[in-house]
Image (cartoon, rainbow, N blue to C red):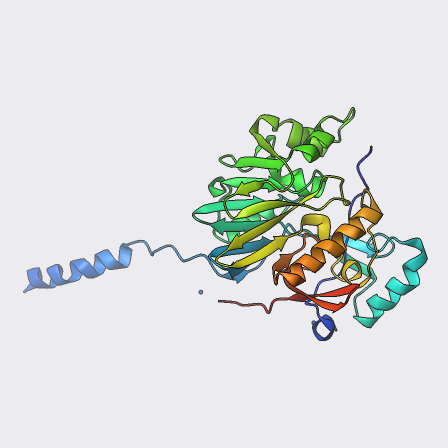
Length: 325
C-alpha cells in the first residue's frame, strides 16, 4: 500500500457560527558597594509566557496542555481534499459559505500537542521536520527545550507527524522514550519501499521505540484510543487528570467544519474513508457525552476547545476563548 497523498487544510480563525464569520569616603564606598553589586547582578530568568506566537497553554485538571504550531502550508482549494465525497461537493460548498470559511487560497495547519503531568512532558506527534518545521522553535518560545521532553508518542506514520523526530539525522528529542502503536509502526516499517520520512524517522530510530497495543496506557494519565480509518491503525490519545480530560485526535478529527458538520464525510487522504467517517462520529459522540476538551492536528490554531452537538448527526467545534495569562 502506498502512502496517501499529502495533506492540506483550511482557513484560520476562531469558530462557532458567530466567531467563524473571527514584558567619610570609606563610609560612602561601603554604602555604594551593595548598589554596584545589585546593578551588575544578572537579572532573573523571565517566567515562560502563558501564551504567544506559535503556542497555546490550557490548564485541564492538574495537566498543562500546550498546542504547538508546526506552521502552515498554502492550500489552493479546500475541496475535494477535505471533503472528498464526490456526490456531496455542493453540500460541502454550501456549508463553507454558511460559515464564511474560505474554500480557496487558504492554509493547512499542523498542531502537535505537549502534555505536562506529574512532572513529565509527553509530546504527541512531531510535525513535519526539516526547513519547514516550526515545532522546536515554538517549543523554545514556550520555554521548553527539546531535551526536556520525556516521552514522544506518534499517532500514525504520515510524514507530517513523524518528520520532526530527527534533526540532521539525529533524534530531536534525545532524552525521550519514543512510543507508537505496534500495528501502525509495523505497517510502515515493513514496507518493501518505505518513503524517506519512514526510513529516516521510524526505521532509523526503531531501537528507541516502545510499541504498544491499541487502548494501552502510554504513561499514567494518558491512554491510547483506537481511531482507525485515517490509517488502519491510527491511535488518538485521551489525557485525564483530576476529573477532567482532553481527547487529542491526531488526524481522527479530519476537517474542523466539514467532518464535524456532515456525517459520512471523509477526507481525500483517509486510507478507508467509510471507516474514518464512522470513527469520527463515534469519537465526536464520546467527546460530547463525556464533556471532554478536544484538539485536532489540522484544526485552525490554537486548535483547542470543545464540541457541541447540533443534532444526532452533526457537531460544531467551539474553540476556547484565547487567554493571555
